[in-house]
Image 1 (cartoon, rainbow, N blue to C red):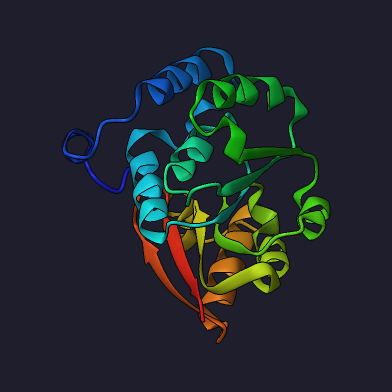
Image 2: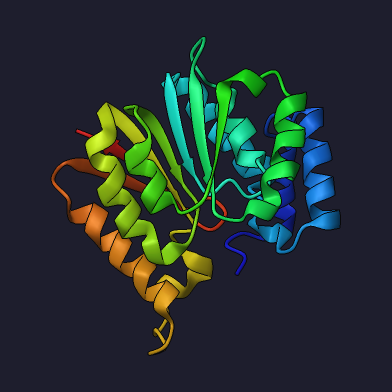
Length: 213
C-alpha cells in the first residue's frame, strides 16, 4: 500500500540527505542476493533513523531485527563517542553479509552482533538503552516492549517500525491474520501505557516514536 504517490515519494527522497556510498552498495547487494529485499529500511527511512539518532546522540542502542544491517549503520551515525549498538538477528545466514558491511564502516568497533532469539538475548545484555529500534517479527512486538522498557534510560526513545502494516490496521481483520492482530494490540498497548508517550508517524509503513517518561 502506497500512502503517497510515487512522484511525491521520489520528491521527498530527492530532497532528503543522500545515503552514504556504503549504504548504496549494501542496498544494491541486498536486492541482488537476499530474499525479501523490501524489508530493507532504504534511503528515506534510513535518513530518518540517522537524523533521530543524531538528535538523541545515544550512548547505547539496541536494534531488534538486523536483516542486512542497513538500519544498523544508519542508527550508528548518531552514536556518542565510544557508543555501542547491540543488534539482534534470528537468521544466522545473514551474519556474514552483515559483518562484511559493518567491517567496511567507520562504526565497526561500535557494533555488537547477536544471532538468535531476541527474547532470550535481550535479558542477557548488560546495558541500559538510550535508543531502541524494533523491526523484527511483528507477533512479538508486545513481548519485546515488555523486555526493553525496564532496561531503558529515563527519556529513552523506542522506535517501532511497520506499525501501519500496509494499511491493514484500518481494514477488517481476517480471523487467521495473527500479524495484523498483533500490530493492532501493540499499537493499543503502548498508547495506553502511562510510562511512555507516543507519536505514530506515517513514514513508509508507519514508525512510532515512544518516549520513556
